Amino acid sequence: DAAEDLVERPPVVTIMGHVDHGKTSLLDAVRETEVTAGEAGGITQHIGAYQVHHNGKAITFLDTPGHQAFTAMRARGAKVTDIVVLVVAADDGVKPQTEEAIDHARAADVPIVVAVNKIDKEGADPTRVRTELTQRDLQPAEWGGEIEYVDVSAKTKQNLEDLLETIQVVADLEELKANPNVEASGHVIESKLDPGRGPVVTLLIDRGTLKIGDAVVAGADWGKVRALVDYKGDRVKEAHPGDPVEVLGFDGVPEAGEFFHVVESDKRARVLAAERANRLKTESIARRSGRKVSLEDVFTRAKSGTSKELNLVVKADVAGSLEAIEDEIAKLPQTEVFAQVIHRGVGGINESDIMLAAASDAVVLGFNVRPVGDAAAIADREGVEIRTYSVIYRAIEELRAAMEGMLE
Ligand code: GTP
Ligand code: NA
Ligand code: MG
Image 1 (cartoon, rainbow, N blue to C red):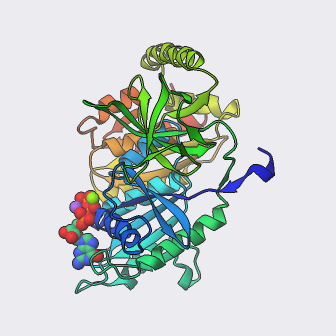
Image 2: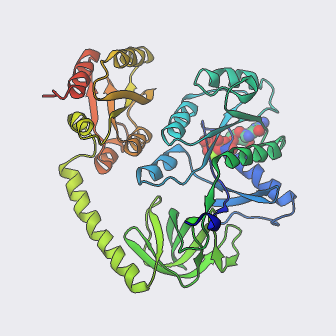
Image 3: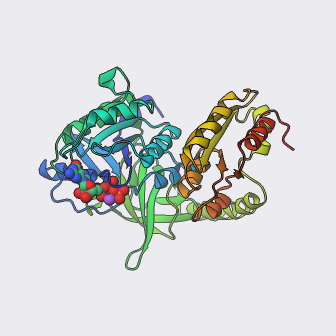
């Protein structure tokens, strides 16, 4: 893009955190600041994303159900989030899903802003939250670190403007710019089949301007834009970089995380979508017979220069063995391959573990634990290798062998 065509775009923010720490309440409260600011009138949220204005500039919030959806998108190759707001309840502190959220945000390489919520509650201890998160390498800026913390209450609406201000300061550092003067492209946020309206697809525009009449391809689906609806439910003629918008006119419902782009004609869109559908069919057959990442091909990949990192997700039945495994992994001789644990946890191997592994090309190691729920099926679909062990030394031997290219 010519530099003069680049203009500032709104940051895209995802809220993550432990169950019941107030993610939804905080989103609702932030949305109400918009209403009370009188800028957008009585907003009834229309789509799974919306914008709030602060200092005359927009911030786009994605209303995701949590880090699983966030990472599922990334596994499809979509990096849609610019900033993660990590919500931690001041009366409860850091919990397992807080740690998961941190690992997911880190693996995605997205800056984190911490919202210490529920400061109105008796027993709220915002300092303790800072101490606990410092132990997870999220040093507060006010203690000489790099992470911005804002103490808030979704209930009393305290400091919400500060939170928006902080998000904008962090966004400014990211220098988020896009060219609005090209054909639009971006990602699918969600899609559904509406009994009255047919396929309804929510897109987030990364660059360019999407207009009525545009021919669009998203994965194996295509469409001609018949109508555009913004987050307030109003019909609009165009959508710009950083805007979420609902699109009518698709032939089907593309998956969340799919890339979309505008092409020159309906005919071209149809051809590209059909080609993609065929490719997906072939890939899914290839996936079933092969793998995306496995211990076996770690050394081969390292030698060919494709990747020198062996990312690991480690799950164990008890905290003690988790620590022992991490110690052993740290002691492994770093050959051409560098082994790193990107996420660890106590308990069965779940869907969230698999999606994180899929998004980060990681192998999942389980110690005295097994896949739970749909995890095994999803691992199969996503091409993620799960290796389970009952003794630690066995796993370490295999890792060492893989790193030296000598796995039997
Ligand atoms: P899940 O989506 O289930 O993970 O929960 P969540 O993180 O979205 O939390 P939610 O917004 O549902 O809030 C959980 C509970 O905490 C609700 O009863 C809220 O009313 C309460 N709550 C949220 N924020 C605050 C706050 O700032 N102060 C107080 N006192 N209560 C709050
Ligand atoms: Na809740
Ligand atoms: Mg919620």
